[in-house]
Image (cartoon, rainbow, N blue to C red):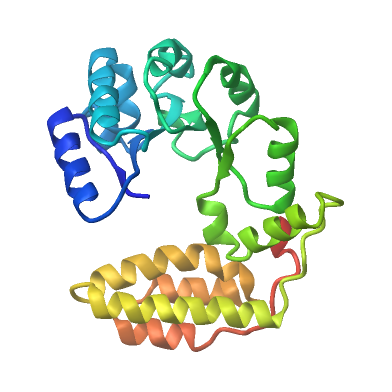
Length: 267
């Protein structure tokens, strides 16, 4: 599903039209991005702070993408009460769903997602609600879906980058009848798959991006998560982060040991 960000209703309608023209029937508006250069301009987590601008974007989105418009939102930008204040407004629109990340914008990704705050706002909404925030293990997922059985789903972000097998293990837990939560071991075969994934992504970045800088930037960020899979991962990560060229990166990754860290599933 395409996700867009902005505060101009006309631009939102134009984007929806372009997306429909290539076959999309759904679109999500990011009302939660915490980055200062976004929020301070009234976009992302800054948008719901302006009630009139927020209403205009909800109107435009629902009109331009009927039955397929959704939003992702935080508790607020600076304080955690904005979302509750906007619940009545949000309920006026036929949103497909609303995804709630229970942090404020100024928190960025620090601290813990406020599950108690999520519990407090969940009953306020008539539209389907999706939970997002700090789902890093099967146990994290289990705690949320068992505590909030009425939610429409769970959105997972950084947890899937940190553990590429998380979705697979969650599905296994669901299909196994939601029994005892046990994180499967991350063995050598899984390490091989992770390394193959990183190699494939690296190859595609080199084919599609312009020059080494954007390739290295993305791979350095990725290895900030992937290093946990490997016994010498911290050493590899430092070498990757020091890479000034693609050749440096190649040499760094070539030193990966495929012995896995036994603590990964709970890290």
